[in-house]
Length: 159
Image 1 (cartoon, rainbow, N blue to C red):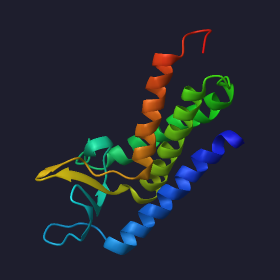
Image 2: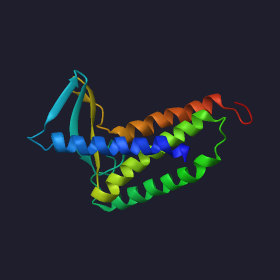
Image 3: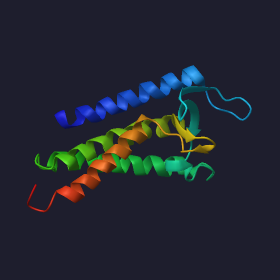
Image 4: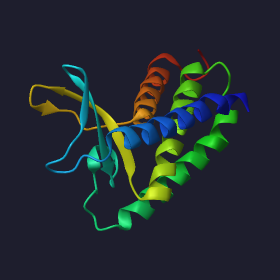
């Protein structure tokens, strides 16, 4: 159960931050968009993403909600089963899977209950914007870095 503690923490932090940002700033609509500038290159803006990463499939007509929910649930179940089987010596792999699991479940909750994922973290430079993201997305991204580190530094049979 220790394995899942960090994943659970990510899910809780993700859900609390999404609910808080949604209540504080509300949805960014054309002509009415509340933002809070943290740094000249970083702001908070609430957006509802009905698609996958980078709003892929956002305008697909509604079927994507259930497809993406099923994919997220399947990946989460796979990770829950795989995690206890990862040897303790494979720290990068274990950490990567824990982070990806927490992020996947965080976004799964939004998608299943609301039909969209709340994104609110926005990085930009001048007029160039990186797609909005959330705590779950950040955990998945950092988890992917750990998975890449595992591929680079862990050889079969060696650590």
